[in-house]
Length: 412
View 1: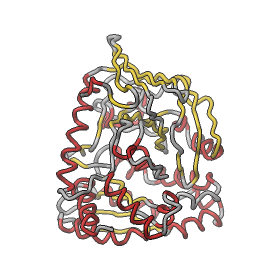
View 2: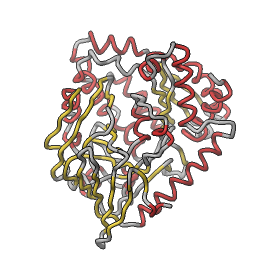
View 3: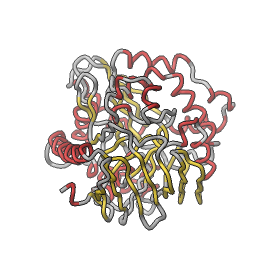
View 4: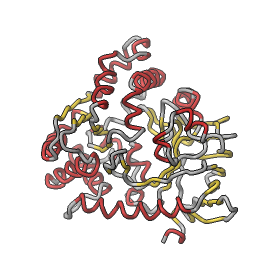
């Protein structure tokens, strides 16, 4: 791989992704194969005057064996010492970098209920940590690092070294790593988000209507005082950071009780190592009342049954079909990248930053205003080349937001 680009990528994740502050603790989670990148990231953290850098390597083979062979009851609770690490470090205002890159097929022989039980238990036990992330007290960022099995899944006909190299090249491209300063590249990228966000927030939208030839025909109500966000986010203290690198989306929250119609996925979803293909949902008053999938229906059913909020939408995200990621014409089997190639929604938890004064309100107050509450947040892609999205404003004006899969002339 290009070692100079690797160092630039590490700098981007620390400076723009996390925006590490003076005397701040940094927690890094990474696959074992990410150690080379992690070494550069640690260097950059200390250059940013981090107080400490804690690295937690994940061995996906051991994780797989645990899910496969442990007693199912193990996954219904999380030890206090595991939960307390996240609760305590977040209390100290740490920031968190997660590098993804596991084998997309590794968990396909694991009972999906085991992984769902663990995720529910972990989120419940680490609620203070989750709240500090959701309520903008701590920065977090997700990036990507290639593993051999992930690369071979995407490029099965290439030799091992060539597949790894090609995946690195793709990651550098979608993360806008080139001969220029990557932080400056992302400052320019930020400006494009701010324009689209401003237009959407000034429209005072009552609802969207989505249609395409796949069969999507969906009305999506928006809460009063919704806020579209995009690119990066602000902590309560004004620190600006990018939660996802790469990112191409502007996003908000739909009203949890005002989604009606059929929504058809346009790309497969890999969830907990299980692939879900050719799936759709039918919504009534916000709730999924029917669904199907040609592959992975049992996984989808487990996801929808995670808790009460899992059958409602928590995020609406707009991504042009012409995005740089879509132009690669590659399915990456990793939501971090694939969601930025397509308009998408998320089942589950909504983000308090997506409604006026949301960061100052309780869960119950947010729910009353239309926000969804859940232990899960799972993105799935719906964008197509022919996707049409119309916005109906609260004064009954009809505006084209997307035509033929991309932002309309309103956004030029």
